[in-house]
Amino acid sequence: MKADYYETLGVARGADEKELKSAFRKLAMQYHPDKNPGDENAEHKFKEIGEAYETLKDPNKRAAYDRFGHAAFENGGMGGGGGGFGGAGGFADIFEDIFGEMMGGGRQRRSGGRERGADLRYNMEITLEEAYAGKTAQIRVPTSITCDECSGSGAKPGTSPVTCNTCGGSGRVRAAQGFFSIERTCPTCHGRGQTIKDPCTKCSGQGRITEERSLSVNIPAGIEDGTRIRLTGEGEAGVRGGPSGDLYIFLSLKPHEFFQRDGSDLYCKVPISMTTAALGGQFEVATLDGTQTRVKIPEGTQNAKQFRLKGKGMPVLRQPAMGDLYIQIAIETPQNLNKRQRELLEEFERVSSQDNSPQSSGFFARMKEFFEGLSE
Figure 1 (tube, one colour):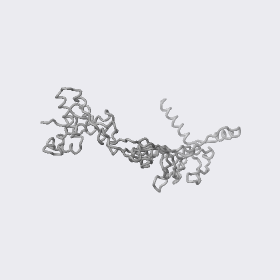
Figure 2 (tube, rainbow, N blue to C red):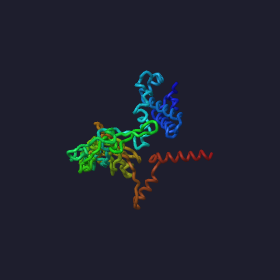
Figure 3 (cartoon, rainbow, N blue to C red):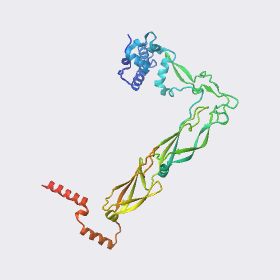
């Protein structure tokens, strides 16, 4: 009677893919025939854990096994399930899926020698004004483009790539490992399945050359700091006619002299004199739309008071809405007083009452009561 697959791998029935792979990796290394030469029990155990993992890693097979057990794979059910494990591609494929990174990289698929080009990154810094209005920027990007001499094939004009003699065009070769075989990337064609006898002299057989390109990038109004813009197909050209990668534009905003941004809202700290805060007044502030807005300050305005200018902030990306502008008041204490100014302030202090500074008076009154309570 076959052992339960979950018990074979030592995992719970609700184990996820990561747990299954980890358990198989550990057991496969423990019972590998190369580590246990001549041990039939280890070889049998090695086959059992491979069969269990081959079934449970496949969602459809696992669902059938959870419902019907081993009977799901008898009499040809589910394509033989674990019974087909010993076939030409079975265990070698699974073993490489798990240990591929230990053998020079994971599985590579052949596509006639064509490989997708790498993605590229371009860092762009823009001003807050440019983020407000949007812009079309011209950038120059050094990248690989398809060789016009060989049209990306990598072969000298008039010739073509030929099928690799080592792997027969599959891009993979098999090597014996004990009782099974391990499939690896072909060392001759590096998985491409083709070789070039007469390489193109312009690109040295790569099918691409390095060149600086000029590209147009649309920066929409309201774009935020850290936004990534993707230009599909504008990355490196693929190897030997393969598809191009993508270009990613990473945007950052330069610090602004007056405004700080928080989403679609703007904040501007405005210093005013002590007398303006006490008596009231007004001033004008410039906004990013090119206009000036008057801000009225009521008498008795306190430090850090905010005034909201609705609709004077940043555009909301790809929406008709606008954020707000918040004016933050910073009261400036007079400095470098002359004799007359000092006299006036001292006179004001003498005639002041608690009603002129209610927060200060209230604070010290509460503080006095607190310490009196401690001494009782």
